[in-house]
Image (cartoon, rainbow, N blue to C red; front, side, top):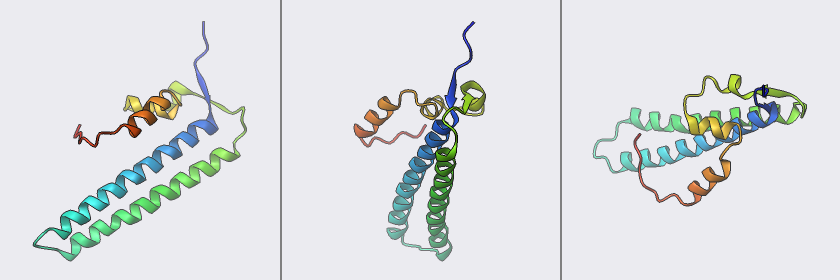
Amino acid sequence: MNPRPSAPAATLLSNASRELRSLRILVERFEHAAYILLHNSNDTDPQEVSDIQELDHLMQTINNIADFIESISEKLPEDLNVQEAEALKSIKLEALASRLVNRAIERAEESDENDSGDCSWF
């Protein structure tokens, strides 16, 4: 019987930190798009401007949490492993789960480089 696959805890945390940084970039793109839409709007509500500015705080928070997680990952012993299945049981997105355990990262990086800019809603 094969033992359950395990992964270094430091690697899992570093990968989670990388995912958070990717989310920050996504929020930054959304903020830019929202500003453009608001700028082109005929009716600018000060509350809407304030709400969009909250995205900056969200980006800073995401980045700080990513830094925190990365800092912890750098201090963990290299031989501290975590059972992959147990660690990932709450992750519903298959691609995210794969990235968190370092599977198919090369393919994900290639698809980012070849991004056609098409919009996918779901």
